[in-house]
Amino acid sequence: MISSFQLGLIVLGVAVVAAVVIYNRWVASRLQPRRARPASPDGAEVRTMDADVVAQALDDRLEPVLRDDAVTGETSPVASGSRPPLTASASLPLLDTQLDALVQLTADTVVSGDAVLAALPGTRRIGSKPFFIEGQNQETQDWEFPRAGQRYASLRAGIQLANRMGALNEIEFSEFVVKLQAFADTLQLGADFPDMMQEVARARELDQFASAHDAQLSFTLRASRAAWSPGYLTQHAARQGFVAGALPGRMVLPAAQPGAAPVLVLQFETQAALSEDPDQAALRDFSITLDVPHVARAERPFVRMREAALALAASMEGSVTDDGGQSLGKDAMDRIGADLEILYDALEARHLPAGAALTRRLFS
Image (cartoon, rainbow, N blue to C red; front, side):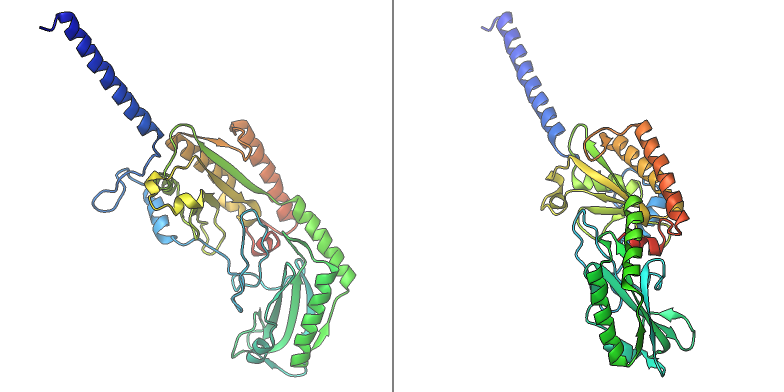
């Protein structure tokens, strides 16, 4: 017969084994990426989302983007961390003396839009700089990108003086002159070119200003405990107003004005976003980025960036750091906010307010 002592040892052993099993399961569950909450039968999340966020997500599912060239359909690949150039788009302003080296093109007779389109160069980019050709509509007297069926009393062209790739140089200006002269000869137009050295000097000055007043801020959110699955992250980000972006692993916070650049961009690992089993993909961090010159001051972008980062860190058990992994506290964020106000003032004093189309062209 089993003595009471032996029975006690058996009970104790079973309890220890059970405790070890429970502990191992608990540890395993802690190491598993956190998953999104299940949806209710009507498709809504179990945890109620703010009504305004839901409405915005439904209305702005596509990420606002700028087309590279509305006329030719040209595109430029944009790599992470690159400083891409931007060419003409119907959503951008017309040529401007502040940003472009202008050339007046004169004709003895009215020129048809069809003839202009047929004579346009195959590409409207020289080096890293876009150049544009516009016509003054005979009926409206407005300057516009050439359109079929329209007639133009005069034409003009311009090459952008600077962008994030640097300032217009002598080689680019000379190539612009050659290409534009060929266009003018085809349509029998006279071309009044500005002085190259003067325009190159203007380009360098503008580039110096842009380099001194450019800012692209990034917060990194790191998991303090368990990793996150992509679904868990996107579910929490949606509650802060983020919607799916154009690329995997990318979400955006849309601007209030249609067609404007997104206020914030949230990015996480692309491979995790494309995983065959997203619930098993583990994310330890993601970033929230603000391209300061591209977002209007009225959007309160840094305030919203700060609020979104802190809210996500709290709800997902994470911490907010800079790119180097240093924790960002209240004082550090206050200093960043104060510096941004100075930057906004400087851009406005130069008549290049953040978020304006000209400003977005310059900082592209």
